[in-house]
Image: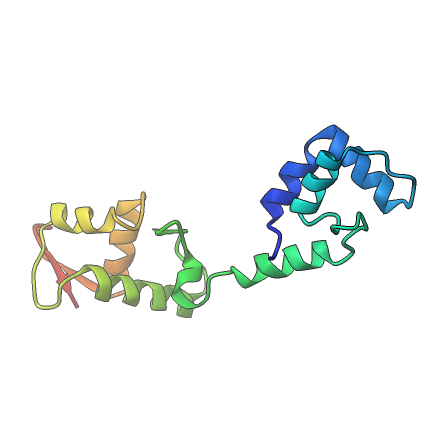
Length: 150
């Protein structure tokens, strides 16, 4: 079982458990109840025998690093676009992805409909809609009544 950073932090947030853990790390005599030692062991801070888990922080950091999103997902947080990338080629990829994913090919949508589909991925609808038009992914009718894929 890989310990989570949340479990480690929540355990160390208790002053008494932090004091016991510090004593164990410093090699001092550890005076603790079995329940306290169990809590430190459950968090991965101590082994079942009461020894300090010297690899814990590397394990926790390694687990967190593996959770980093890859590809197009790295531009989204909780399903929402985390801002447009500054890098032009990355911005192009994100805008292409959103156009293909959200705007039906060969179909014209009203501005209200475009706003509705964009609201599923951003809170800044006007900026994203403008970027899709400015970068040539959407074509806007001159009177502003409709949008379609370029």
